[in-house]
Length: 211
Image 1 (cartoon, rainbow, N blue to C red):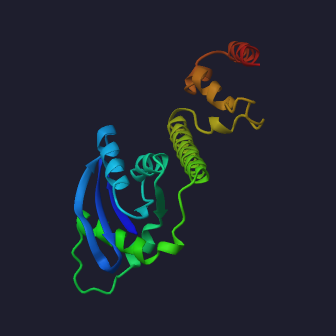
Image 2: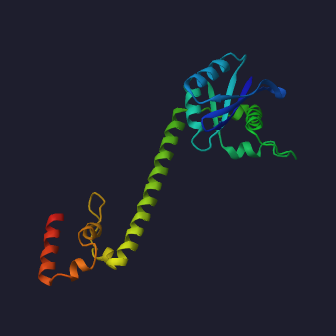
């Protein structure tokens, strides 16, 4: 049995391969995240004698191409919570941390937890995609709120309280009526500098145009 520990970074990964009793099969080496680099890694792992299990940490976004590529090549791949790796063998006084030592630690963890390792599946891919979509939606909503608050602050400098002129709900497309109003009547002088009848006429034309 061989365990392959992969410490993933942006654009490259460090690989360590060990066997039981901490026997080093291959000293830690680096692989670039290119088609040729990944194919070379797959070919090398397929030459190892005995069953081979690959373990990496599911941290950030960098691990995703690696886990999909290796899993697609038919290898047993398991993405593990980085906290489990961090707490494993954490009783040493020496705290030397490099990509090579991290890769070996992941490989030793895989060896110790061999029966418990869960293989990466298509459901993991779907779950990852859903998490990404959820993060992007959350980011968009925060940006939307920030822009809205900023616009209200700017409007209060020239047309205080204009964002409260309309109590009706948003339109079906999500747009808000007060924003369209501010686009047309962006300053209080747009109303105050003309007569009441002219202002009323302009407003009624605006209402008709915007439904």
